[in-house]
Length: 110
Image (cartoon, rainbow, N blue to C red):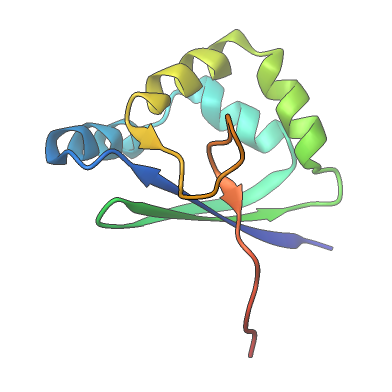
């Protein structure tokens, strides 16, 4: 059975940086693709409005945020990617200190 998570993040308010960020995501590094799959993420999409980002992740039963964080911490290529992406990203208001993507609460479902 799959689970869906929705997360949000902001980008720095700079059109050139946003264009670079989107360019990086046209063809993510193969190691990043592989790490996403290895964590149990079966589907992922990111949307943008202005500087606000919205990510939808569908995961299988093997996924956990704790496992994902541990795998990321142990993967130098993921750390390199995250450091690069942080140059484009900004935390959303009220995000925990050091947090990037933060979980959103579902407020409606049809």
